[in-house]
Length: 390
Image (cartoon, rainbow, N blue to C red; front, side):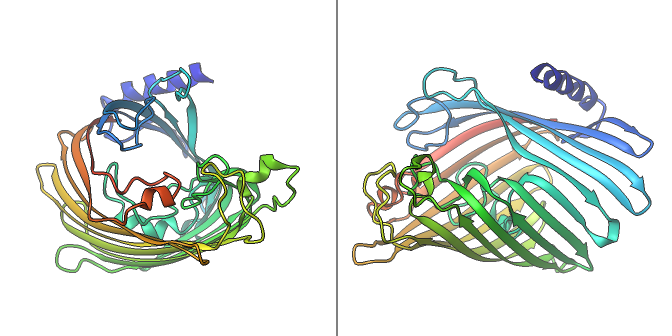
């Protein structure tokens, strides 16, 4: 398998010297195509980012290298229908010692059918439909998405129907039972890694994009997401104790954006993910100790601005707020406020450099402790990176 992937990567690099940037078409004949794409990057992260694969990254500056390799496949069945598939993997920087990460992990895996003007359906591993709503403020390389719960929720066992027309976009997804899946905001799991065993779920998003108004189109989007977690009340089966106190969540989100890739762009997004817990028992197995399982919500707002110049330089800034609000007499109601700034330079279609910083704007003391160390919004951090894309 690895030898096959290496061969595909070599073929893609060779084809990219004569093909378009961002993807290389290595086969296209009789209605069947295969595109290969990828990237290799190196990023310097400041101390206390928690953003690197390097061992001992907390308290130390570090250089993190990583790579991605992806395949897009398509086959025309007839004039009404086509089959498509996607696979994308991520490779870490090769730290193979204790605590290191030397894996070649699948980020996206799906297969589907495209029915032309009647929409498409796909099955596999990807984010649910609410990602379409929250993504409009995801413009930063490293430290954004403070309020975007669901941004990293790439989960297996999903199906999604998508339809677009007349400026309208509609997405509806369903989740089947799968273990050890990413759930942003699940701060009190057994291993403190925001992974839970999911029983079922669904999500929907609806958006409308206008024609250009002054400097670009206006896109308005709303979304909802729900997930139910597997019952792990049997204390004798504590491998499932990662769910020990979690019942389900409901999430609502809305966003509006104005502009395009070049010129002026601005967007604002609100999200609220509300977790229902089983308060009849403590989660003795969560990493931080004995957590009383009270309901809590994680909500927030992101406001971003960007200006992209024709020479490939972009300047962007954002104000971001996250609130952690826990029920009960001992529950906490804490706020984190950050300011993000970034400068990008797309030197060539294939090569990009950037520097980014995030500053704490008087977040409540103890915010990062309250979220079990998953967040680090009380820290001022920066990064400097370079990326080659094919």
